[in-house]
Length: 180
Image (cartoon, one colour):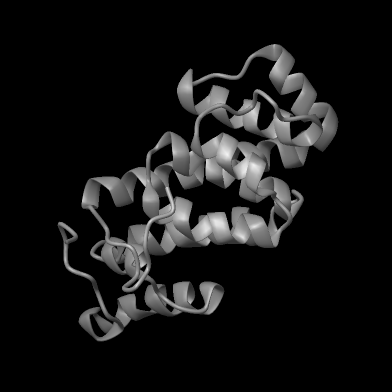
């Protein structure tokens, strides 16, 4: 059970309903994650808009985005973000061996190429709170300036979201079992 109420559109003041509508419009619905966060509508609206940009508009290959998101979910031990994005990662072409390596915390060992670079970057940032020159250089050569910044922001967004959901003990959507 979440530590805060799940907010419905009608629970919000009329001037705050735009935040609910923006989330629903960009994601197709308002799930338990944002429903709980909407206890602070203005902050959640701004966070959701930032998340919309890094998830849907950043200049990074969708498959690589999902790898980075899985890393953020795993490092935060968050079943909500992990479960939602494990399916999406598969849809974007991430195979079970890579997903399992991230879940089992053995990655980036055994990964190659772009996968290894993205996972190493995310893990360094999330576990040591910095990125080595070698790791940064490898990702920067692969992505360039804009996409490297956007990758960093994507990782930090999902880390923030995962930690917020952990603190608030937000439930998975009804009927959904954790895959973490």
